[in-house]
Amino acid sequence: MEDMLEAEIWTVARMEQGNAVLLRPLGSDTVVPIFVGQLEAQSILIGFGDVKVKRPLTCDLFLELARLTGLILFRVEVHEIRNNTFFARLLLVGKEFSEARPLVLDSRPSDAFALAVRHKCPVFIAPLVVEQAGIPADLVIEDVGEFAKELEYPTQPPPGTKPQGAKRRDLQTKLEQAVAAEEYERAAEIRDQLILLEQEKEG
Image 1 (cartoon, one colour):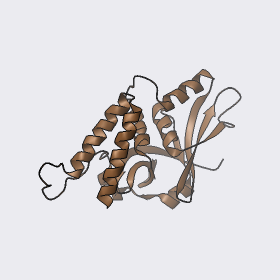
Image 2 (cartoon, one colour):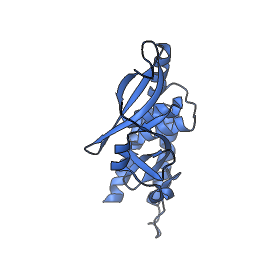
Image 3 (cartoon, rainbow, N blue to C red):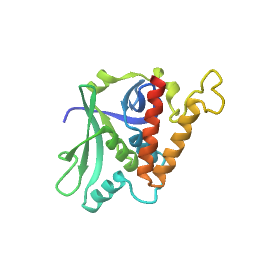
Image 4 (cartoon, rainbow, N blue to C red):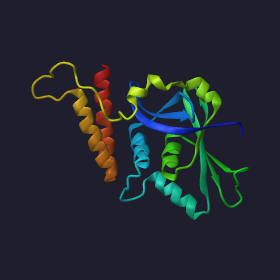
């Protein structure tokens, strides 16, 4: 396989275009923003914070199944970007598979990241992907740690209404609670409300 750069999942941030995982090659001042869906971002954050859930999520189930079958997630790689889409893969070892000849599975980056933060395995990225999609970390430094936090309207909203930022924060909190309680249908409904709110903002 081609040479890869070891990287860290720096954070999950809210940017103008949506929720992004910021992947930073070690020792670099460049980050690669990889945009993920709302529920996927929640899953990554749950793993990031070692939040315990009552029953296993899909990523937890995958890791447990791999363990029971004698396989271990060795590393994840973001190896390509094509037509503005990032491609990732999982490398597993165990049984007849070794680090030199691992079992390689295609994966969405969001799923790969959710697995990596839970299993605490290394993350790698192809140099060409960094070259094509990397941006200076200084450009997004204000977004770091600002997931689920928005600015209020600069002017007073109409009586009886909440500023859009406050509504968004309320919905984000409810979404987190729904995911933690494994109420996924409710979480999907709240996600749809967030999407509508974002569309209203853009409109």
